[in-house]
Image (cartoon, rainbow, N blue to C red; front, side, top):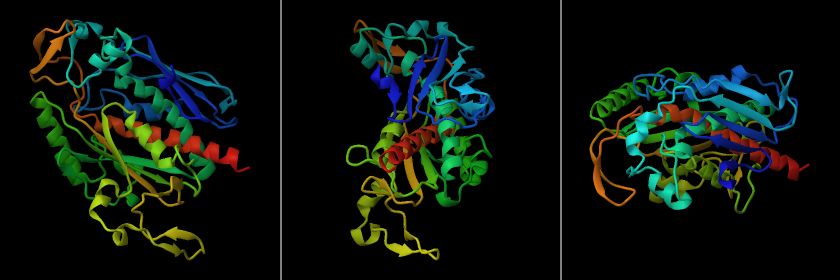
Length: 361
C-alpha cells in the first residue's frame, strides 16, 4: 500500500498493527558500510516505548528490535534492512466493547468508510504503535547523517497546554531534554507541565501541546523544488505522525504579525569568509532549499482522543449512545512523541541528502 511508504532514495515501508503479531519496517536505499548495532536502534526505541513514567500509558512493551536482514558483521550491506519488534503486552479484550462504536476523534469512522471494515483492537493500523517502526528506521538515518555530515537533530517539548518553555532552541542539548520525564529542557516549565498532565490525567481527560525540532549541521543546498521543497517534506513527515494537527517552520504563523523589514534575514559574511544569514526567521530554508543555517520547526499535537470522560457517539448501526473509554492510554502524547519527531526529521534529511548527491555528482 503506497500510503505505508515514505521517501524516495532512502525509502521506508512500515507494517503491523497495535494488537497484531509484530510491528516492523523495511528500509531500502541505505548506503553500504554504515556500522549499526541493535543496541543503537534500541536506545532510540526505549525513548518512545510505553510505561516510561506515571504520565505515559502503563502498557508494558519492551519494543525489543531485531535486525532480520541488510546488516552483516555489523555493517549495512546496501540491501533492504528489515527491522522487527514483536508485540507482547496485548490485551485485545479491553477493546471488545468498542467494536461496534465509532469513537470521537479516532479513525474508526473514516477507516470504516474507506475500507468497509476496521481492526477495532487498539485502532489497528491507525494506532501510534506504528511509529515504533519509524523510530527504528530513523535511528539508522540519524547515525549516517552524524557520521557523514556531523548533522544533529534535537527535539523537545516546548509547550503543554498554556505552559511554554522559555529557552533558546539553539542551545538545547539532547542530554538536557532527557533530564525529566516530560522531555522539556526548561526545568521550571517542566515541573509545571508534569503537574498539569497529572491533573488532567486525574480528571480522566487529556491535553496537547507543541514539540520544537532543531536540525544543526545541514549543508546548504538540500531540497527539491518545486513540489519537494525541504520544508514541505518536513511538514508532510510531521503531519503524518498520529495526533499532529499543525506544523510551521522558522517564525511560522508568528510571521503574519511582522513586516518584511522585520522578518527578512539579512545576509552577512562570517569571520571564516562564509555567507550566512544574521537571523533565522525563515527557519534555515529559502525557496525550499536549506541555507546551511540551523533549521527550526514546531509540531502541534492535539489532546489524546481516548479519555475517561463521558462523550456522545453512535454505533456503527447509527444508534446514539454514550462512551466512557477505558484502557491504557497516554494523558499527553508529547513526551513519547519527541523521538518520533527526531526520527521523521532524520528520514527527511537522509532522503534529501541522497537525492542531492545523486543529482549533483
